[in-house]
Image 1 (cartoon, helix red, strand yellow):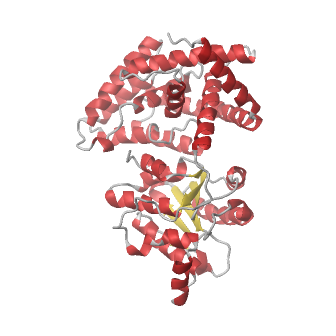
Image 2 (cartoon, one colour; image 1 turned 135 degrees about the vertical axis):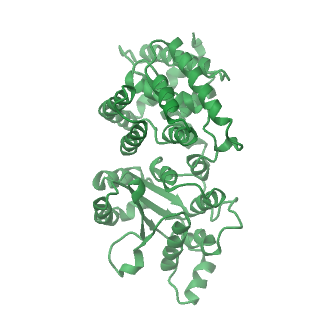
Length: 439
């Protein structure tokens, strides 16, 4: 059993008191919990049909992806959830065996000892799949099993099994209240015990009669994000290009970051040729996304004064489309300045895409960097247009996506969707690599 020392309890008390002062986030997490109840019922029904052989494996995977992409309330669309499941499916020749393994592993354990047995069995299966891969970086990660299994266990019983989020693991280990173990079943058991110990500790701190597993999760997720924000260096200097951009990138796209920043020499070079920098940037992005595998629909300056995104990236085979816009900004772009115009054309062109069978619409803005507070503006855009996500992508990070694609031409538009779907707001190069399965 995991027991907190008195010193650790005092630390938890300080964290909880700071969290409770953040009224805005406390309220936001309550809204998430309310949505989780409704969405969790849908996922649970889908899961039970799969466990009873009433739903085929391929249908289960597709429907699970659809639900979570619409309401990504547990982070399942990421590398250790939906992407992990897709990797298992693609790397398993015997689909009946995979179905049987999943049905056994995903069913809620009767006890924590039963949970440990399920983890041992499931991780053994994943290890056997990994042996087929020469490059282990491309193989499903065995440790992802902990999040994957516990997600489904919590869907069935939200008050018994905590989800093994990598961010929670990181926070707990940094606080010294969880010790890493190579024995993954024992590691989850310790994580399980720690969550229950924290529930009791937090209950004593707040005086509340009941603390949910979601409550524990929210407090330490909040702490994780707070620490990330505090650790991020604050600088007015805007990076023009990523230090690791490959010199082998096609020349037509290599100066996209300079154009996005409005670097004077670059801008003047195109003006000398009689070309408007904004139009050049749009055309380069059309070429860029074709290299990524999209059938680009060119809008922007071709529409001569009409309000429209710069282009559309339809992926009908995966039922999604991306509307994108580029902004030249020397000191970074503030999305709040154009929110009404953005909402207008997302409604128009997003509606057209939905009529064509692409029900998942994403909105992407590309610029040199992004400034100001954009959380409320993004929430407003999502609420008024029903887009799945709004992503703010620095131009240097954009080029990194192409570098990854050139190194691995087999990356599909389905996998690229993870970049558009998973994180709201800005995204770093390292996160892109993770979402595309390169770490």
